[in-house]
Each structure stands twice: as C-alpha cells, then as structure tokens.
Image 1 (cartoon, rainbow, N blue to C red):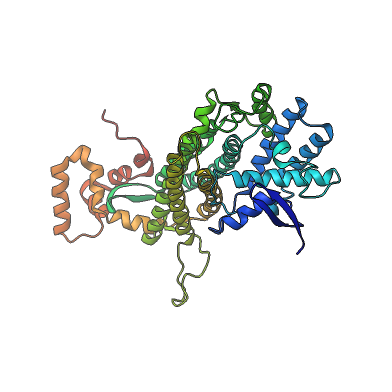
Image 2 (cartoon, rainbow, N blue to C red):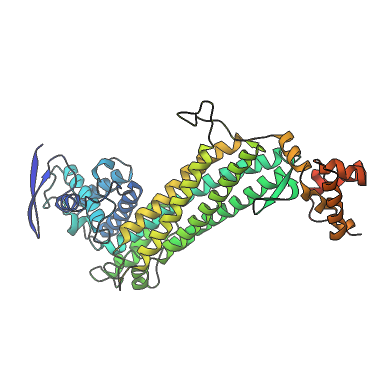
Length: 458
C-alpha cells in the first residue's frame, strides 16, 4: 500500500494514498479500536447535508471562491448520494463529542473537492478541511443537528413500518371476529372474548405507537446550527448564523428551525431522550404482543407460520422464532434507551461529550425497529386460528359463568359452579345450556354479544 504524509498540530502521520480521509481520521482509526460498531452512514449523510447548507451560505456571502464553492458543493452531494460510504470506517465509540466523525466528513469532502479541482488528496492548499469545508462551524453545532436530521428520516421510515404492522393486526381482527376464546388474566382463565377482539387490542396498541412515532419528529426540528462551539456563535458572522438554518431546511426538505436559545440547545440533549422514550414504549408493546402470540401458539389457539426446523436433535420440532426475535429486538431497544438517557445526562456544562454513544444507540434502535416491524408484519399475516381448539378451551372454562352475573348474581353463580363440579362435568357450556336453555346461552356467548360494550339494562 502506498502512503502520503500529512501534518497536524501533533506532528506527521502516514495516510493511505487511496483514502479520502485525512490525518485526523487516521489518528481516530488508531485511537478508537474499541468495538465492532461503526458510525451509521445515515449520520454521515446528514453531516454532509449540513456541510452543503453551510457551503451554500458561505458561497452566498462570498467567503468561498466560486471554484472552491462549486467543488465543495459537488463533493457534499456525492457523499450524500452514498458515493464514498466506504470512506468512513470509524468506531462508533469514540471520545471527543463526535469530532472524529465530523472531521472525517470534512476531510473526505475536502479531498474529493481537491480532486475535482485537479489537485491531490491530502493537499490543504487546494481545499482545506477546516478553514473551508468547516468554515463557521463546530462539531458542537454540526453533529447534534445532523443527528436530528438522520433521526427524523428514520422516524418517518419507522412510522410507515409500524403502520404496516398495525394493518396486519387489523386484518386478523376482521378475520377472527367470529371466533370465541377465553380471555386470561394473570395467566389464569378469565371471561370469554373473541380472538378478533384480542388482535384488535394488538392493533390499537401498535396504532398508538404509530401516532407517537409520527408526531415525535417535532421534538427534533429545532436545531442549534450556527451556535458554533457553545451556542454563542463565536467565530461565525451574524449573517451566516441567520441564514444557515434556512439553507439546511431547503437542503434537507425538513421543517427545521434555529433554536431561540442556542447555548441551551447546544448544552442539552433531552430531545433525544424524549424520542428514545417513545421508541422504548413501542418496544414494550412489541415484546408484550410477541410473547402473547407465543403463549397463544402454545395453547393451540393460533398457528404461527412454520419457518425453519427448531432443533438439531428433536425431529419435527418447530419454534416460534419470529416472536422470539421480536422480543430480543425490543429488549435491545430498551437497553439502548438506557444508554441514550445516561449519555444525555452525563454531558457537562456547554457540551455533551458522550454524543457518539447517544447517536449510535438512538440510530441503532430506529433501524432495529424499522426492520423488526417489517418482519413481524409478514409473520402476523401468516397467522391462522384453530377454531375448534378455541371452542374446546372456552367451553370447558369455569369462567364462563361470569357472563350470567347480571341475572344470577355472584352467590348464585358460585352455587351453580359447585353443582357443576359435583356432577363431575367437563363442559360448562353444555351444563349451562341444560340449566338455562340453549338459545339463551348461545345469545350470551355469541361474538356479537361478547364484542358489545357491556349489557343493556333496560
């Protein structure tokens, strides 16, 4: 491999000749050999969008020559298009509040712009990564702004994926509306309901998640771009500060606005915690629903799609692998919420030093939830019901007598159960038909009656 020699305040270092990154990124690659987690390219893409907005303002205000403006602008757009996705190999767990990731983007854009102008990579005289690509910017306003952009786009994708899962449960709600089953509380048989109503409950919970994910992007639309190092705008001209958020709105296509209190927005990361909390709420619903489906499958009331052999030693065993994967995905998102919370809370004074961990955890949760919703949606659509098994379990349940409390009362209903037990009966529904008449029992346990809200007392 051939190398070029680059220089910074610490001295000189060799950088691979083919690399578009520079000395700052090279030092980071050597310093942060911490994990197998890489910086999300969606974050890189968003940083490049911020760079494009800054370039547009600096060009408009004549802080860049026309030639360098055109070259930097083109380089920003190429990075946004994913052309240099292999040039950002940094570990996500890095010190410096995101400076290494930010500088990697500065260096790749600068070296590509130099190349466009006919120069060589690593030649700061052609296009300087700090003095020109990073002109009037700081990691502390670029990085959080970019994270908000990346998160908003991911939230929109998540909202669509959650909508798909909600639709899958709604389809099953209609399909299973006429199937009576026994409800359960504390893992013990309770009162009868329909399988459709149970799936309707799943759809309603996921519907709340859909609304929350759709709305919570509003928490991220206020950005601190223009605040530079600590939100005071030091080092940037006032005209730039008032223009750059507007340009970013055009570049991103998002309804962004500049924070009224730039120092406060720079110092605090609580909007990310709020969004992560909403993701955790969705994860909780996914875990709960997936576990309910596993239990219903165990009881034989529903059949999950058979996807793969379940054992290396037990022939014919099929496991509920998708619900298990959904549960694990939900637990991972819950764990990431803890990391987002901790990272946001551990910021000090005018900066959050742990923004890289926060960014990785938040964006990872979003990607996990997008994919798991898509997988889960297809799985739910393949679920079938076992009508006979539902009927068998519900007909033998002692809890059926609860449906007659309005006319029998608690004590009389209890006495009826004792009579049933004394007779050694196994099918309470048939027993009740013998006592109260078949038509009355069928009416009480009809899907229409069970799905009605309460009973008419007139």
